[in-house]
Image (cartoon, rainbow, N blue to C red; front, side):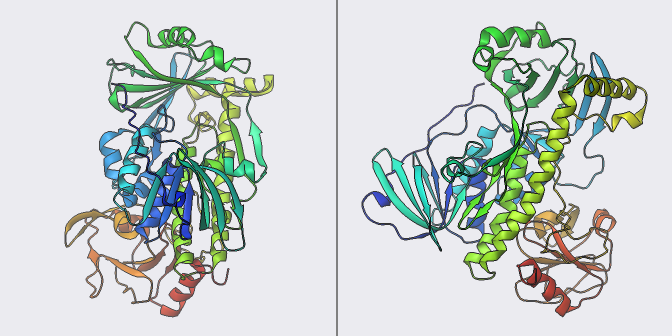
Length: 535
């Protein structure tokens, strides 16, 4: 079943006939990152204009693996449940060497989480859901398709853009310019910014195939299968995932000398797929040949221009760190930008986006490069090491930790951020929240759903959360007056957070402080630090 690529409507923007008022935020790019940014800001009451030179969702499945933390963010944005319902859930991965299974792993072995380790869902569905969600905010999100930014000029307190449309050019101004225009960012190129890192010579073929028969051996349970030296593909590497609509993603390493234009043809691709899939009937839905980089901007914040997602950093696709990293960029930036625009924080709070997400990008690039170097050894010694590790891993568990086909996306710790207040706690400051099932006045719910999105004090056990300005309150296993309280019926919250503690939580779902006493002054100091004071 092929996806129906329905164009979004174009409307002549008001700037064609008269000057527009200055906008608080302009977002360039209506992919998953730009649309998520717009929805995040709208939930905080901030208006934005979203400009995109296209009028249809992305062609091909592209980003498909959405990690647990990203799904929790999408839950806050209002599309998480929809993604879970449509997507293919998996948590088991299998590693093969030749035709032998080396070992398998479970990414989420413990219970008590609302979202699974990963959901596979084609990028075009995510964009579709985000466009529809953005339309829930007609007074806060102005979506403009077929509006191509051709130039921009930065000023002390705003940015001026020149935009081309089917009806001619116009100009608009915005206090902040958010560049979500992808790996080939025109914004970055206009500004002449270096995009430095490592380029890998290997080419990979991505193919989406539609087939009724499951290729997962003797069961139909969706898993992640990765082969080193597969018997069906010339001794290199291969990856298999399932997506919705009986679409399977297949990645095949095809070597550094590959001509992408010659390789990305049905005449070349179909025989390769038949080698892997045998006689099972299939339909080729989409294909692409690529090689990739691990690269980043030195800085993500340039006065009033902020780079988010692939415009700021790119990684290899092995480990699902691209789209997931971009959504976590949004989660980090949205509350900070809203706080600045609404007067709760000084503009230099935005600099901490560069600090924190620069750290996240470095971690993602490091993991991505290590995976790629293991998969594609560059010297006889590296190849010998890789092959010996795989041989040992058949029998010896210690060697399995050395196999690297892509360390799968996890939220990075922000423990070293200047916004955190150090503390010794079961869940240390800087750590992303861990979910747990709760029961409250309205029935079953989840800890992260109740906690994220704003500053909140999470009080667990025999400790009372003081009433402080700008901070919500949540209680677990207590019956306090003045704020909602929940029961940890299954014990997961106490196991993960301890008891008799107050956690100060950031809007982006990270712990920023922890207390064993309800010290209002200390909590207010930590809150001020998290908003950029006393960095």
